[in-house]
Length: 143
Image (cartoon, rainbow, N blue to C red):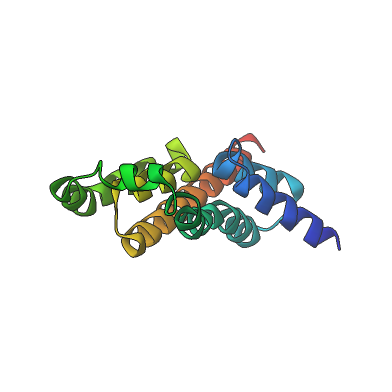
């Protein structure tokens, strides 16, 4: 039961827009979860908004006039550039800007969802592993 409480806390901090991966991972480590569990729950919580934005976006934007107007703002050449070069931007900046904002921006810019999903997941995972490694190295240096 104690593990479940710690795991849900880490997941929620990863999911919460103002905390995300930078708070979830240290909180998971501080709560006493092992490194694999910290990474799993923090990444799961931080990745879930990508799916929520993707599937919720169509329901929120599609039927309105605003949705039609918004869809017309992105040209085909801009959409092509986003799909070609936006991957690197997503890989580097997803944890910095927040996955919620990055998912909405990628959706608005017309980025291929499958590509965005995999790159965002890789970015979140890389940053989570990096944070755990830095925390453990810092704890070893102190002790």
